[in-house]
Image 1 (spheres, one colour):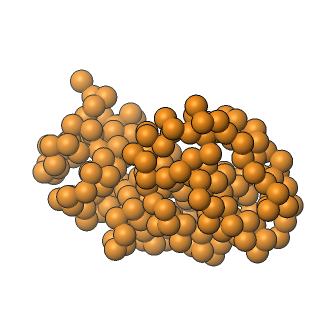
Image 2 (tube, helix red, strand yellow):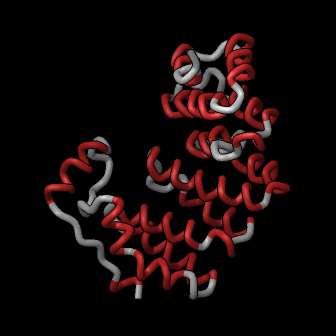
Length: 214
């Protein structure tokens, strides 16, 4: 069935989408809402196949040239999140580093965020898997892992992730530090303000962190 699955886009969408992603990837030219509509049937079908078959499908989608197929692969994984154990998700983590850019990395982060929300006792294990990784994209996941946790945010883990990359000269790491602090600041401004006063963040990360705090 996977071999018959083809997305249909337009040249009018393709060129601006490629430009937005700095021409790093080719695109079919189908925007997210239409992509989800076109992939609805195959994603629904993915819930009925074995976990081994599911992995094969996602691997096949990831091997395709156009960027939207990686998006469909991640959508497919998210649709099956309730039946995936950590063993499966650890195996899926290999895709984070493949064709890595902020769009897919952050979409994968959501998958792991949903997992720890469903399995809070495994949060530290998931965090430790990404923490200190040699690939900075994996460390970005460690920093932003708890974006959806709100009041359940483990501040020790958040602090640990930030401190490890405090002075890392990588835009997407510093952006992640600011983003994670800004998100937590929505429920605890005082803690974030104090943190930014006591920890010497880069000017960029600090500005990002305090963007919503007057």
